[in-house]
Image 1 (tube, rainbow, N blue to C red):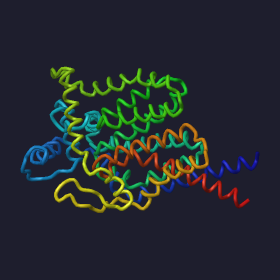
Image 2: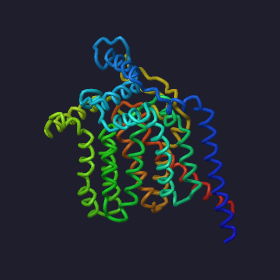
Image 3: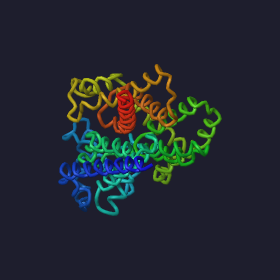
Image 4: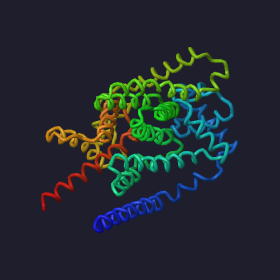
Length: 384
C-alpha cells in the first residue's frame, strides 16, 4: 500500500514537471505574441483597413491588387457580422458561428484574437480530460499526451496566425468525443448532439458528419445496435444548432429551402478540394506538401516534424499487434482508433494543409503515449 502511494506521488510530480515545462516553453517562445491577445486593437479604423484589404483581394476581384491570408478574411468577416451583415455575404463558404465568437471578443474587448486564446486553453483542458478517460485515469500519461500536443507546432501556430477558425472548432470536436464517452453509459446522446452541432456551425459541417459516422461505427463494433437509433434520434439537435447560427439569414427573409440550397452550394464548394488524393500520406512521411495553386509543385512544410510519421504509424501498429495477439482492446481505445482511421481516410480524399491535421493529432498523441507506455511495461516484465 505504501509503495502504491509513493508511485502515485511520483506520477503526480512527473505531471507537474511536464506542466511547468510546457509553461516555460510558452513563455520563452510566445512572450511577444501574448500581448496581442489582450490589447484593444480592433478599432473602427482597423475594421475599415481590413475591409479595404478584403475588397481589393482575391475574394472580390478577378485581378486582385493583394492576396490576403485567411486570418485577415476572418477578422474582417467577424467585424462585419457583429455590425449586422448577413453571414451569407462574406466568407459564406464557412459556417458562421466561429466568426460570431470572434465577434464577441471584438464587441467586449475590442480584440479579434482573445477568443483564439480562450479556445487554445480550453482545448488543452478538454484534451486532458479526454486523455485521462482513455488512458485508464492515469494522471501522468494524460498530462504527457496533452503536453506533447501542447508543443506541437500545428497547434501553437494557431497563436501566431490568429484569428483562424480551426482552433475555435477544435474544442467542440474534442468535447463531442468526451461527451460521447460519458453519455454512452447512460444511453442518451443529448449533449453529444448539441456539441456536434456547435462543431458544424463553427467552420464546416464535415467534421460533424464524420463524428456521427465514427460514433455509429463504434456502436456497431460494440454490437450495441439499438443504441444507434438513440444516437440518431438526438441528431436533429445538431442541425437545430447549425440553423440557429444562421438566425440573421432567416431574419433577413430567407426561407428554409433557400438555406438548404445554400448549404448545398457550400458542399459543392468544399467538393472542389477533392483532388490529389493520398497527398496527406506523402506530406506526413516525406514532408512533400502538394500545393493546389500555381504550378502545383510539391513544397516542404516548415512546420513538419519527424514525430509526425511516428504518431501516425503507432495506431496502426497497435491495431496489427492486437489482431495478431488477439488482444481485446477496451471501448475507449477502439473509439480513438476508429476516429483516427476515419479522419485519415477523409484526409486521403484530397489536398491538405497542416492545419487540417489539428483534429487528428490530439488522438494520435493519446494512442501513441498508450502504445509506448505498454511497450515499456512489457519490456520491464521481460527483464524480470
